[in-house]
Length: 353
Image 1: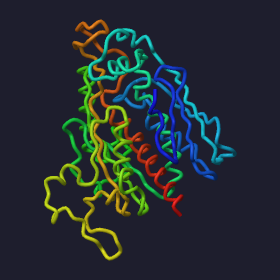
Image 2 (image 1 turned 30 degrees about the horizontal axis):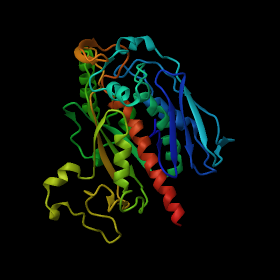
Image 3 (image 1 turned 30 degrees about the vertical axis):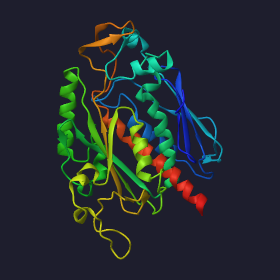
Image 4 (image 1 turned 180 degrees about the vertical axis):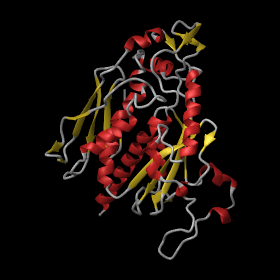
């Protein structure tokens, strides 16, 4: 299986399966001399881990990170950083009923057709459990980036949306509720919606908005490695993501150039920021903001027809512990992948100087 690494200079390779003994990763290219804040790394893991509230999967994992290499006396050494996260609460028997059937809209069918074998216990490598490794690397990337601020939040669940621009939101309130929405009134509506969907044995999708501030000018390459292209790739590599837009996004397609152009101020900033902080694939120093769409979780606790490995249409019903909505736990994953992209480009810029 290829495609387990992300990044060029700041590179992450992950390994492990959802119901194996452990998952982990190797971070290559991290600069030496970074004094790591291990509490901050664990805090990011706590934001992503299962079982943290009643609106997410009830699998209980401490998600404690054990570093194996690349760190000495609290500092990065410049050598590969190896880490491991033990799986402690697998219930593989919850998946025995799908051993010979393919869950609709899941990776079951394509994995088996591609590789001739699949780990049906929690989906194996296709499980979002793998994203815990990305959060570790992203937490370190955030510390490499220092002054850059990355804040993601839930901006919609189903048909419930925040109807305020991000500039009017208080990011300190993101962690004040289970759904990680900085608008407390809308947050409660989202929570109620997720609880109702869970009672139905169903799932629901939503969107995550991410805002990146204090980004230096000049990150990104102007042709194939555009900053927004790499951000898009990073977000679309996250489980359940169905869409990505930055700046004005699809709304920009409705506008005239005279409406859409960001007029300059004398200091190089712009009066508006429909470009989303990126022009010509290169950061311009303004806030970078984008939105990521997540589909409803494929495994539902309702009966539905599906295909088995003998080619017959059969009835199945999902079992086990699953998120009714992945969006609240996806917040630190979105931030982590954004940090990995920026750290990679930041290091590339250092090579130019």
